Image (cartoon, rainbow, N blue to C red):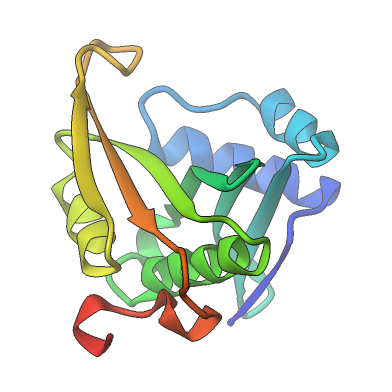
Length: 157
């Protein structure tokens, strides 16, 4: 397994995964724009040379927002999402961020459990946040004073 900066040639696969995994997927041109965005970082997780997942974040001053994180269905449940999220948290710490924020669907219990396991807390409900009218949950993780090694599970802290 490797985690690498997303490249233009990865976009086709990432956009296809996005369509398979999400009811309101980002179009390909969004990902292309993000590669040019100086405030964004996007990564792909590769297993045996194939893209098995991807994640992205924006940095705005002392805050990082996790914009996307996804693992291909046939790789889910193997810890790849956890590793990719830990990597993104460590990148935010390296960049000097004090907080990492994200939004998650209220129906996505599996993701909420992962986020909570890695130290994110629920802060508010966003009514009708998603395109289909589903509510979103804002979550945040404080990063102040953490080292890259601290991106691990809460139970290990």
